[in-house]
Length: 411
Image (cartoon, rainbow, N blue to C red):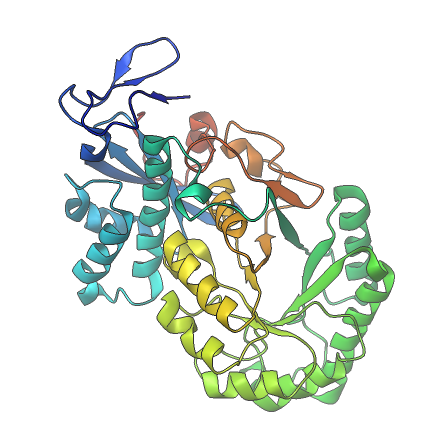
């Protein structure tokens, strides 16, 4: 752990010493707030999704690590932004975020891969800033409401179209892995589809989905909350009929029943049913989430932090959601880096419901970092170490890199 001398006196000579007492980083006549970014590097790891890791290097010997939402081309977009960050102060997180949004406006920085790439840099800046200031990321976000954050497990049965197969997997995850919050897919083949492109559900298809929900919720009972994901698959009428058919069951939420573009339709679907409706993964920044919240078109908002704009943008969304008494369930398909970033935000906001975990069937997910037991009993404990509180295991990164990627430099 790095120790910061004379932190309370900005005019004092500044050094950083590791436990051996060796002086690192800044010149003696420079203060902690004079640190500069010297490089930005990316590597893509082949997890259950492509995990795009971003590192911000500083002349203080501190390196911050973040993660950008997966998708081809993000590493190139991050590389494109490197010149806009060199020589900048890594503590100016908000200013640099807005700087990147403005500089990348021609590439479409209001949404999509560009804002996801900026998200990875923004998370890395928080990690670096926390290390420079010797505080956890949650402290940079205003302090914490809780010491641990609930994690819900995105489950996949052997036969996802077979109701009892889903129920068996739900029981296994609850009993063997200790989760009390789960999610299953409902956009699975029922055998009654004629043409998926028109987004219409025939009644037998709705009845098949009800059978899945009934099997899982009745098997689990009150041992766990269970949500169900539709992946934007259905038209408005079919979504309303499906949500109504699920009202007798204990559904935590029904996620993304319709495509994400038309917020007016989203509002009518949500208003039509007592089944809680969640969405938000496929809209970007606070501006994208605004109408969902201000028009009460959603019961649970589900931003993806390495995708939506990063931690500060996630905080803005959570604050707006709190005005409308809407809880936040963070979508997440990330490595330990992005997952911990979401958990740090979850610790710092009052309305955090849960953070998704999408890698329970990947045996080496936790090997990516030196720390262990990150998720226990369906909870993620928030570290007290500076920054995100995680240390990349470079051997695992090297072993699992996507072909053609280059390993990060050491600090």
